[in-house]
Image (cartoon, rainbow, N blue to C red; front, side, top):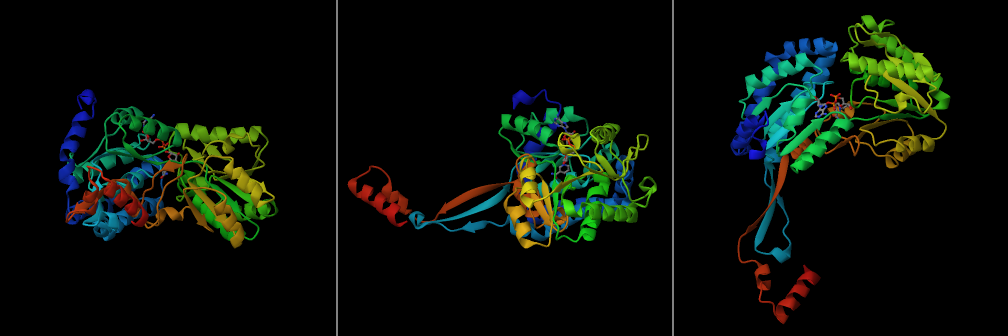
Length: 470
Ligand code: NAD
C-alpha cells in the first residue's frame, strides 16, 4: 500500500478499504435502506434538477430524461429491492459421494472497494445504474463521471454527498487524468462504461493490480432488414431508436443493411416518420437533442463531409449548425467502403444505409467487422432470423425492434470482445460486483481421509475404485 501514498485519491481509497467489511456485512435491510435513500433523492428531491442539468448538457428533452434516465434508475432500484433477498441467499449445491460427510454451497460476497467510470450520453443512468448493483452487492464505491457533461457530474456529486458517507460512496470529478490516477489504485473491481479504446487503457491499468473488470463498451451495431419485414413499422422504430438523444446511444442502430429491392420504400417511410416525430424543422423541435460538445460536433460533421467527398447520397437531412451543435437527422446511402462513416462507431444522428442482394452477403459484411454491442433483425421470416442470429455474434439482439432489450432488468446487458467484457443489469450487475465464494463444510469424518498417507496397495485400489464409481 505504501506504493500508493502519493496518489491524490489514496486517502479516500484507504477510508473505503477500512470500511469495506462493515459495508460488506450489511444485511438485506441495510442495503435496501441505502437503495431507498438513493431512490428518494432521484425520484423526488433532485428530479427537477436532473432534468435541468441534462437540458443544459445535452439539450435532452424532458420526456427522454424521464424515460431513459429516471425511469431506468428507479426501475434498477425496484428490481434490486425485489430480488436482493434471493440473490443474497446461500446457494446450496450437490456434493459428490466421494466427499461424503460434507455439504457444499456458495455465497455472493462483496468484492470490496470498487471503481465506476461512466460516460456522458446517459450520465445519470450509466452512473447510478452500476451503483445500484454495487450497493446491492455490498461494496464501497468511488465514482468518476464524464467531464463532458459538467452540470450532470456536479449534480451527481451533490446527490452522492447528500445520500452517502464518503467511506461508503464518493464521487470524484475531473478529466481523464483523474481516471488515470484512480486506475493506479488496487481496486477490487472496476466497472467501466465508455469507448473500446479507453476500455483497453482501463483493462491494461487493471491488469497491474489483477483487478477484475466489467467493460461496457460500444461499436457499430448493425440492423438487418429483409424483404418480409413490415417496412413502415421498421422505419418508425429505427427513426425512434436512431435519433433519440441525437443518436448518442451505445445501442442505437449504427447502420442499416437492407434488401436492395425495398430501399426506396424504406427511405420514403423514414421521411414520413421523421416529419411526424420532429416536424419538417427538427431544429425547432422540443423533442430533438443536441450534440454534447463542439469536438463531437466537428467529428460528426467531418463524417458527412467525407461521405459527400466520396459522392455518397444524402437521402435525408444533412443540415448542421455549429453554434447550437445541431445536426439534422441524416440518412446516407451509396457509401463507398472506405467512407469514415463505415469505419468508426458513429454515435450521432447519421444513419448509413447499405444494401445487399443475399442475406449471406450481409452476414459476411457484419462478420468482417468487430463484434457489435447490439444487432437488430427486422423480418417475418423465421429461418432468416435464425440464420442471422446463428451466424453472427453480438452482446444483445432485438427481433423486430431496437434498443429496448436494454430496458429489461431480467436480461444480461453487455457486449462481446470489442463491445465489452462482462454483463450488467439486475442479477447480472449484482454478480459483476460479487465474488462467488465456494464453501465446503465438513460434518463428520470424510471418506477422503481413508486415502491420506502413508499410501499402501489397499489405498491404491481404493483410489482406483473412487475414480471408477464416484
Ligand atoms: P470515453 O471512453 O471517451 O469516456 C468514458 C469515461 O472514461 C469518461 O469518464 C472519461 O473521463 C474517461 N476517460 C477518457 N479517456 C480516458 C483515459 N485515457 N484514461 C482513463 N479514463 C479516460 O467514452 P464517452 O465518449 O464518454 O462515451 C461514448 C462511448 O461509450 C461510445 O463508444 C459508446 O458506445 C460507449 N457507451 C457504452 C455503453 C454501454 O453500456 N455499453 C453505454 C454508453 C456509452
